[in-house]
Image 1: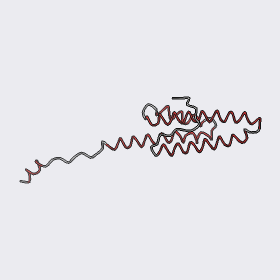
Image 2: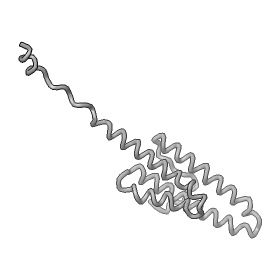
Image 3: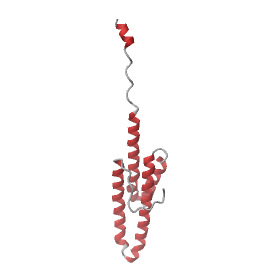
Image 4: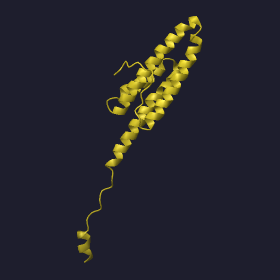
Length: 136
């Protein structure tokens, strides 16, 4: 009788792994998108690296992760806009107003990059204010 019960009991169900990759993928996309925004901060130390960081991460991951594609475009567009603002401020140093504008541009860049990274890590698609959209 014990042999009969062994054959009639159904096999145990497979472990639930189908939903785990989707959650992991969404979290991976959020993380990569957040790193795309934060890479601009690391680049501020090295001059033009504030454009190269987001650009490189965007080019590497844009085909694989749609969220990173959107975040990368936003980050690159914003950093290009900040580059233009910095160059205009640098020229305006001849009229002394640039000395006030350059720190404001740098602080605005840092604050907006941090806000974008936090919003992206929370799952919100962030659009930078005052940004020229070079890449659509």
